[in-house]
Image 1 (cartoon, rainbow, N blue to C red):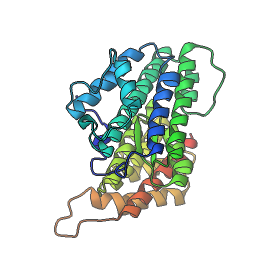
Image 2: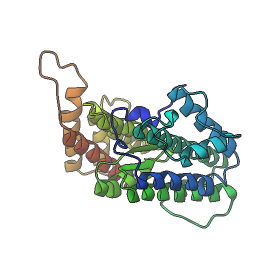
Image 3: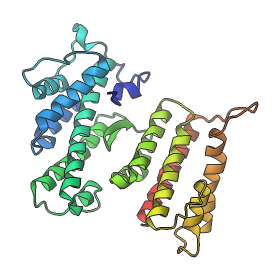
Image 4: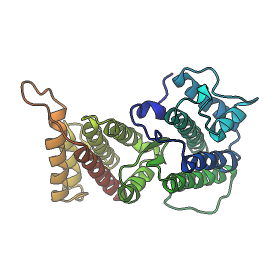
Length: 321
C-alpha cells in the first residue's frame, strides 16, 4: 500500500541542504522525546504503531530495515536521535537524512491520531471531540481522554519546536506541511485545521491538504482543490440543515440554499456573491478543457491567496453552525 510520506511530497525542495545545523539536531531530539515521553506512554498499542510507521516508511524508501535495534520502538527512536555522520553512507546527504526522520515523526504522530480517532468513535464520548478540536479542555476522567489530551499537548509542542528551530513546518491532522506565512498560519490555518478535524469534514480536510501539496509543488491545480474543499463544506452545511433538494447541479445552487431567505439567510447576499465569483473566475476555467484558448496560469502568491481565501470562508461557515 502506498503511503503519503513527507519526502515524497517535497522531492525537489532542499530544506536541509546547508548542513546539519544545531537547531535541526536539537529539533529532532526534542521530537523524539515528545514521542517517547509524552505521546506514546498512554497508548496501549504503541508497539504496533512503531512497527506500522517503520514498515510504511521503509517501503517508501525501498529499505528493509531503517536502522538498528531489538524492537521497532528502539529502531525508530534510535533513528530519530541518531547524530548525522558525513562518512556514513546510510545517512546520505543532509536533506535525505533529515527528511527521513521528519517523515518518521510524521507517521508516528499520524498513527497515534488514527488510533485516538478510533477510540473516540468506539467509546462515543462527545467530550473527546471537543478536546480534539481544542474548543474546550475539561479535566480528564478516563484513560482515553488522558491519552487524547497528551496527544494535543504533543502536537502543540511539536509545532512550537518547529518555530523555535526556524523550520517552516507545521503538523496538523496527520501531516507535516510547509508553512508559507507565520501570521496566516496562526490566524487562518491553525483554526481551520482544528475545525475540520471532525470526521464530518473529512473530504474538506483531504481536499485542502491536496491543495497545499500542489501549491508547494508549484502546480496550477492547487486552486482547483482549494475550491473543491470550499464546495464540500458548502454541500455538507446544506445537507446538514436539510436544505438540499437534489436538484442542485453545482456549487452555485448549493450557495443559493445557504443564502435563501426561506432558510434563514445562513450567509448574506454579498457573501454568496463573493464565493460564487471564486468558483466562476478561478475554478470553472480550470475544470474544463481550454481548447485553443490560453491555459489559465497563476503565480505562487496568487495560488497561496486562493487557498487562504478558501480556508477563511470554510472557517467562517463552520463557525456559524
